Length: 300
Ligand code: HMG
Ligand code: MG
Image (cartoon, rainbow, N blue to C red; front, side, top):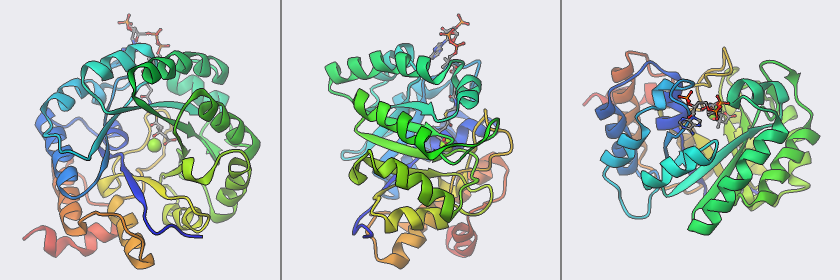
C-alpha cells in the first residue's frame, strides 16, 4: 500500500555535484542552504572520499563548515572508510552513509576493493558510529544492472543489502546507478530484497538514464517504500559509471507525490528556483520536466 508520507533524501549536493563540472565553494553552500529553505529535511551535503578519485567533493569539509544549519534537518555525508568517517565527524555531519554494490566489477572501479573487502572496511565505520551515536545509512549500487557486468541477480542485491543491515545500517538505499531498471526488473529485485529487509528500512535511488526513474519510484511507492532519493534539477551521475545520467529530479518526484496525495513537506516553486540557479552556475540546461514547466515562476 502506498505511504501517506515520503521522506525525500536530497542527494544533489553530493551525487549531483560529484559528477558535474566544478562549481565554487559558495555555489555549493548556497545550494545546500536553498534546499533546506525549500523544505528538504535530509540533505546529503558532501562526501569524505579521496580527492584524487572525486575532486568535486574535495571541499566537503568547507561546505559543512559554511552552511547555515537549520534544526530538524539532517546534513549527511558519504564515508567509504574510517578515514572518511573521522573527517565527517570533524565536519559535524549528522549522519554518514557507507556505499557498497551488488557487482564485484563496480565495487573494484568505485572503491578499489572486492565486495567482501568493502564489507570489512565498512564494519569499523559502523562500529565507531554506533559508539558515537551517529546513524549510518547503507547504499547498494547496481541493483538492477552494472556498467561492467550487465545484469545483476536480485539474490546478490538481497545478500549485500542484508549484510549492510546486519552490520547496523538503519536504512538501505537501493541504487539503480546506471538507470537501466524497468518496472519489471525493479519489481523482481524488490521481491528478493523485501524478503529479507523490512519495508520501513528501505529507500530507492534511481538514476534516469532511460527515463524510467519515475515509473520505478511509483512501483516502489505502491509496494510501501517511503524513502526516495533524488537530486534537484536531476543533477549528476556516477564518476565510475560512464554514461549514467543524473539522478531523478527532486522537482519531478515532488510533482509525482503531489499527484498521489503523498505528503513530503517541500515547496515546489522554491525547489524549482534552486534547480534553475544551480544549473546556471553549472552552465547546463535544466533537465527536470517539472523545472522546465515552472520556468516562468523561477525567473521572476
Ligand atoms: P584506495 O586508493 O584503495 O585507498 O581508495 P587507500 O586506503 O589505499 O588510500 C589511497 C589514498 O587515498 C591515500 O592518500 C589515502 O590517504 C587517501 P595518498 O597517500 O595517496 O595521498 N584516502 C582518503 N582521502 C580522503 N578521504 C578518504 C580517504 N581514504 C583514503 N576517506 C577509496 C579507496 C575508497 C578511498 C577511493 O576508492 C575513493 O575515494 N573512492 C570514491 C568513490 C566515490 O566517491 N564514488 C562515488 C560515490 S558512490 C555513488 O555515487 C553511488 C551512489 O550514489 C548510489 C548509486 O547511485 O548506486 C551512492
Ligand atoms: Mg547515485
